Length: 149
Image 1 (cartoon, rainbow, N blue to C red):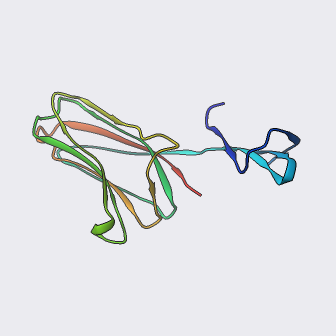
Image 2 (cartoon, rainbow, N blue to C red):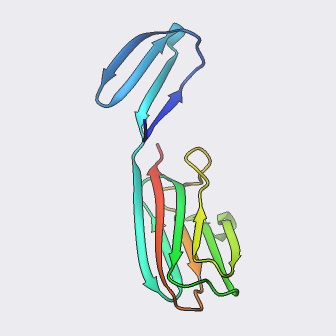
Image 3 (cartoon, rainbow, N blue to C red):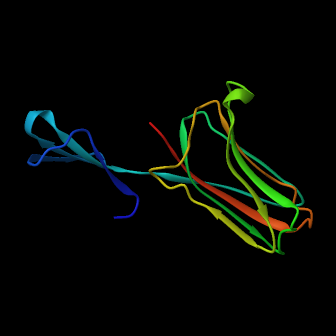
């Protein structure tokens, strides 16, 4: 069941009543316990170019980062350092660097903190991805994310 995820509000051994409606499955149990199977909608943001990567993802909603994928037409230069970070709207004291990695002889980079562990960005925060790309190689970049409620 791709794109579906269980969300438990409380632990219960017995779930008794099954209600289905509006794309939401709710299981009711003793003492108001409920488990919900909700559809998780993934979004994909893309960028392509040649030269330095200076990418910024912002949203008017709270979002959770699931994956970052970067492919280069030719290998990264040994001096290229990829940086993925949270640019907090509260100021530089609240910025967080998730990835700062030297890339050498690679044509592909993949970072997947995952649906349960991915960083959450507030509605006024940005995810920034930067890499000098000294070889000026053509690149394709994809960020997979979901709205976080």
